[in-house]
Image (cartoon, rainbow, N blue to C red; front, side, top):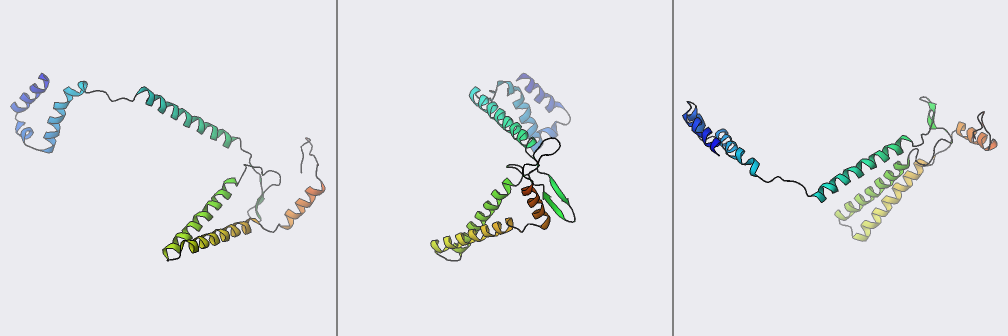
Length: 184
């Protein structure tokens, strides 16, 4: 505290003391900082309890291990091979598409989108003044319509080349290449 008093005495004796002693925001902040600085070591340190610190460390470790595991799964996930060209279009080579290799999430999001659209249609019907039962019918019909659209997109006619490849694969089931791997 004596250091703070000495600073105030020096400030009052200096020629610019009139600037410091004028009430202003800057001088108020300067004086407040000078008054609090000696008290800083006396204030209690804010710290987490040991349990909370251990909890936070465990949470960070779990999150990091989950991220490492996800990266390993992604790195070693089976990758389908594309065949075709820009003119004819690309398709996945037969036999390279496996569970987890592509598209498993797309169906989830298509279903989720259909559910969201059905819920939106139900809300619109309720806002238009329909009863709860009528709005539920609107929602179910919207959901059914979206599911049919998704199913129709997934069913498509095979091209002539795809039919030929499927027929050849069926005819030569169990055929092996030079290294002894099954081709079909």
